[in-house]
Length: 152
Ligand code: C2G
Image (cartoon, rainbow, N blue to C red; front, side):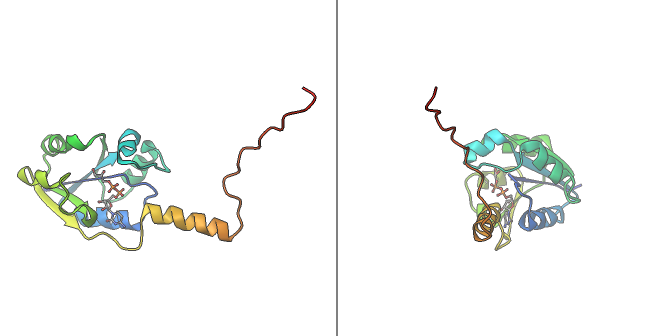
């Protein structure tokens, strides 16, 4: 059994994520996703829309995913590879050559899959924000400042 492992935040799960997971699974028989926790996302400078539990449930519903584990730090990867007997670590091509992954070649195969162009969580957020502005939808209501009553 060929065991594949990938890492990510997978917030606002989209087609680019699904294509990555689909192609990663096609490289083996069992796909593990190490999902970034809220705390780790803070380290990565990412603010997620969905919390960890929701993102985990969504990934577990994807047919290509066999197991979701927490990604809590940059340093856990060798332990993950050994603990889960991983044969291949797979990442999108935006990580190609990264020192955060290249050292894993001493422990397992490492494959970068072409990133899906034209879609990203950031793009989704920006497009929705623009749509709201164009549609005149009020932004998130600003808290009403309580007017100081002159009588008290
Ligand atoms: N991805 C992709 N195409 C996109 C968007 C994302 O192939 N249009 C891939 C990324 O390359 C990554 C995976 O989908 O392999 C998850 O993307 P993110 O959730 O943005 O993950 P990231 O912030 O890159 O976290 O330790 C590594 C990090 O946790 C990776």
